[in-house]
Image 1 (tube, protein in one colour):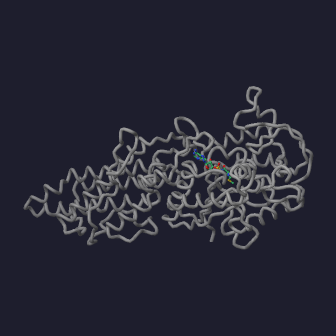
Image 2: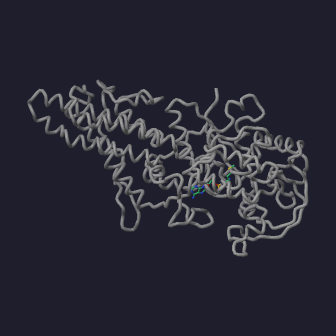
Image 3: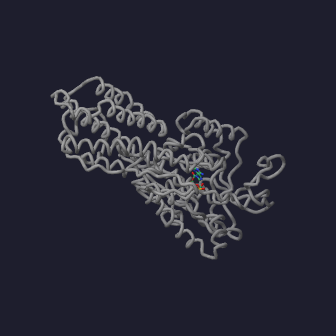
Length: 518
Ligand code: MSP
């Protein structure tokens, strides 16, 4: 059996986790949970990128050993994953022996086959970005600020023959439309490749940087951090062992737009080609979360701490907001005001109220049991048809990673259930003595139950905890695979329902900008 193998980028261990990191984990987790619901065997990997100059420098500043900084960060990032309900199967750290072993094996192989060679390097170097630069990297004659101090250096180093595979890569991208999503990002990579590529310097002299994986063929050097980090996708799944084939090639590498060019769009496929491995099926490239138009980053000091938001509004609301607001291919501006609006309207008014009203009516008029759907009048038929035309669209949107669209359609349906409740007005039907009205009343409760059941199924990948809770309130076991369960019916008939409860307590925006639950 081949797993659907999905990964995220591995985060740098030199700073605390922020919203950008959280988003990427949630996105990969939503895809994972969605695939699992549809019966696919998924293997989900995430982890930490622990070597390199940035980590060494941060550790020096803090006066600690690099590994102890990494241990502290690994704890913080893993804690974040736990709070976010991330269902990863493994967490790889690049300081682990299993990883270092594979990096060395691969370096040796590439060296032995002549794809890595030693040469003299003379040119510009940005310590901040750990990158060798060329004149063409200047903008208007100056080095962009993002490179920090750029110095001229001359040293012997080891190079990987990127240029040898340049033509192959151009053709691979041109022939495989599915490889880079969204497609306009593939065009950006092809544009970058137009000028050709230089061979990649994959070593750093220990005299300058000691925090890295030693080259197996020259003990005076460590491996360039990107060459080391990318290999995590192979080392975690047992490269060189029998179990490897059950995972590779990766089905989706989820990454941010900043690490497509050149790392994942150029270095990675060429490394794999040189190693003799298949190329991943897809690079899923997401946009950035911005704050007032700027990228969130530690150095800008405008980071949003995801754990604070989770503490205030709950993990499901947080995951919902990230998926509802980010249009994956673009950037999105983060605003707490918008988060609160979505929380109170979509989650509080639309979903939360629906569940609590319906449970209340079921207790009051039907002794908390789901009755039979015996009436099939216009109101019921309209809701049923709306579901039937919505769910295929929702699945299609999820298949295309358009989660904002899937949620938009789903919440249109949830609002339609609320309108159905208004139209049927069970509280009025309850006053009637007619038998037909009693049937309508019971049908309306059962129809609402069915609507809530179906919506909750498709919410599961995004809001796993609340979905489970609603399923418990509906008296259904949590669903393992949804395809059959998505059909409209009366499958809850006879179920004992839970007591009404408030799923999303209203949160008021306070004048000082502080919020608290009431
Ligand atoms: N360590 C490298 C990745 C190596 S993968 C073999 C790295 N780390 S990072 O910590 O800087 O970023 C990790 C991921 O978080 C990247 O995919 C990056 O794009 C994403 N994000 C970091 N800040 C972000 C936002 N503000 N918004 C959305 N995602 C962004 O790059």
